[in-house]
Length: 177
Image (cartoon, rainbow, N blue to C red; front, side):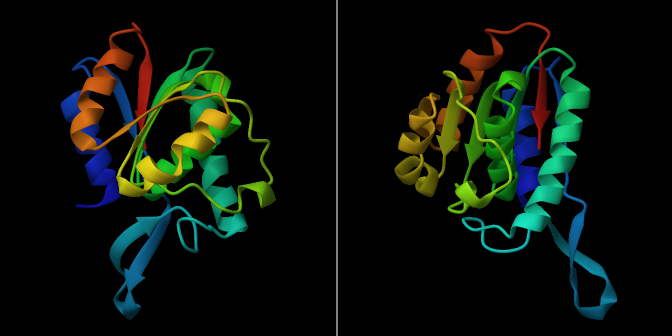
């Protein structure tokens, strides 16, 4: 199952039925040989923990435009898996005033964040759920140092956490990467 399929499944099974969900798939396609058969999609070139900056910037720009267009003057919840989780966390660092809550599964914190042409801002107590083995052990302190309110766990723990986040807001738009 692809990361996008996992995010869709999580969103469909855990978010309230009337929640508006937007699933975003990267425009970059990885193909198999000369046949042009898609193997998958990717947001950026390079390892998850050290993305190549120009392709990352392109993907982040597209997501920023979608966030600003869809959020209006309100906030959205972001849910991402794998590279989609990395993109969601970068979007939250760039636009924390537009994000109500952030949940990522199996995402990587870019080690080259200091070289990225983004102004990573304070997260101002942003509710953040970090799922997956690497996220639980490596990132809570990084998020907390930026002011996030962090919870960690596995996919099963995400259900209870999402329920506390979605019941506290009415009429919110939640975006599924």
